[in-house]
Amino acid sequence: MTTDVETFADEKEVVEQLQGARERIDAELSKAIIGQREVISEVLISLFAGGHCLLTGAPGLAKTLLVHSVAQIFHLNFQRIQFTPDLMPADITGTEILEESPDGHRKMQFVKGPIFANVILADEINRTPPKTQAALLEAMQEHQVTAAGVRYPLDEPFFVLATQNPIEMEGTYPLPEAQLDRFMFNIQVDYLPEDDEVAVVTQTTSRRAEPIEPLFSGDDVRKFHDVVRRVPIADELVRYAVQLAAASRPGQAASPDFVNEWVSWGAGLRAAQFLVLGAKARALLEGRVHVTVDDIHALIKPTFRHRILVGYRAEAEGIAVETVIERLIDHVAVPGH
Image: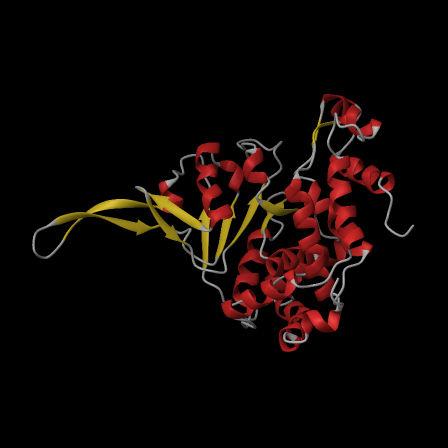
């Protein structure tokens, strides 16, 4: 493994900018968002790592406001797509129309949809049927849209930050597993403590919010992505992330008994990939240029909770997916311990 100095010798300026970014970002976000420190941290980690993000919570918890505010800070082109039961795939990706030129000739012209932006807010993504949800798959994975056999690349950087209501709520559709796996994190947004709610009500009913000032450009974000990937991580920590994901899969030779009993489907390879990548981004935001076990543990729940499907026995016993993840942390040996 290369040393920290060797890895970042030619990236010192970008590293210092990234390490100093958190305080400035918090100052700007505080103009619009009160509390939710952990949620904000996880959203920023996913953006710095270049991953998509799913925010789950009841209506009225400022999920949409948070995404819009983050897009303003990074001075990125922002588009909001409101997902409804009648939304069609072409409403997201775009469509071909017949256009007549001045000389009288007609030809098909592709009109780009709202997906052609840097930050896409897929608002209430689980209120539209799976066919329309699937329209995002190619864009999220390949950063392109294919229409009539022609590929149209999306602008970089490209992020999908989706919000969804709890699936128990009326009028919602479960996201396909293939699409869920494209999201780096599934971030749970909960109600604020009473003091924070009082502060929100006071602030929003007494004056208009101050405008959020952009701090970075799209070029800055692309540089951050490159630097995050170059953060050194010990081989044993990479192996640890892989072992955590592997231990969540039932029916394997090394599967723990509680996984075989409670889990129907475990985390795949992307879980370990995103866990390591997120840990690298978290290390930089914490002012370090190396990854620790704490970084892995801090991000395992948002990385794994949408990739592990508990079975009927777990549901009957009231076992939540978070409980399974906590048991995984206890079960898999920590490197160096």
